[in-house]
Length: 124
Image (cartoon, rainbow, N blue to C red; front, side, top):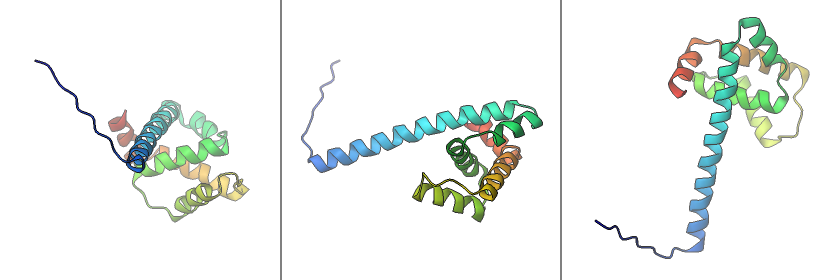
């Protein structure tokens, strides 16, 4: 049995849009895979080591991990939403000391939340 492949020409704008969607999907999957590794490493630590690791994360890593865990948890925190929105709008802006401390605390608390632990078991 032989398969015959047919190709057709598509307008350039459509081809560009399809390629953009493919690239976005690949970037999202890469981001998800990286965050799964980070969160699994944090979950494998004891409580004190986990807290120290969270508190030593650089800002980009902190915000990316917080976004991933926040989406996994299904919680609704106006504070987390505001920080993530601000960082998306202005990625070079440094968080204030209080924002950074609160973000770290929220991440540590979310990582230890049972809903996140069970969600990580499902995505791994």
